Length: 201
Image 1 (cartoon, helix red, strand yellow):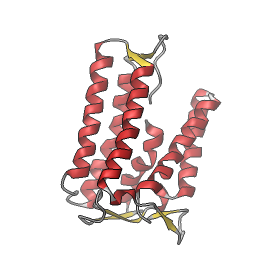
Image 2: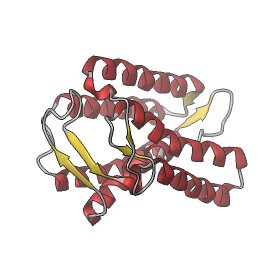
Image 3: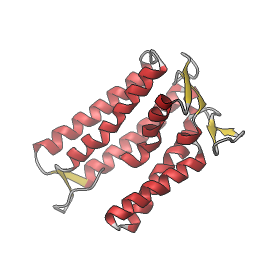
C-alpha cells in the first residue's frame, strides 16, 4: 500500500514546505481542478526511481527478502508510469527538465472512470479471492475500507475543488492513514490455504 502511494504521500509534505507548487483551477481538466506547476522532487521520473530504490533498500534491510524488495521498488515507480497516462503535459523527467510528459486521460471523465474503475475492481478482486478473513473483522473492515475508498474517489471526481492549496496538502497527509488501516485489515486475513497474513502494508 505504501509503495504505490509513496509519491503522493511525499507531495503534500513538499507542498507545505514550499518545495513544490500547485494551483487550484476549477475546470482545468474534465476530471481534475489542479494545475501542477512544479513537483520534480515527488513526481519526476528520475526521483521516482530514487524513491523506489530507497524504499526497496529499506524494505530489504528490514526483511532480507530480495524479490519483495524488487516488487516494492517497481511499485513506487509504477505510480509515475500511471500518472503519465492520466496527467496532462506536466510530469518532468528529472528536476530541472524542460521536457514535460503526460497523455491527458483526465480530459475525459468517462474514460478515466472506466479505466481507473476496472483497475481498482481488479485489485479488489485479486486481494479478496487470494485471501480469506481470519475473523469477522477481516471481512467487515475490508469492505468498509473499499467503500470509503470508492466514496472518496467519487467525491474527488464530482465534488467541489479544494478551497486552498494548504487545505489540499493537509488533506493529502491523511492518506498516510490508509496503509495503517490496510495493515490492520491484513492482520485479520490470511492467504487462502495458509495461516499466514498477506503483508498488505
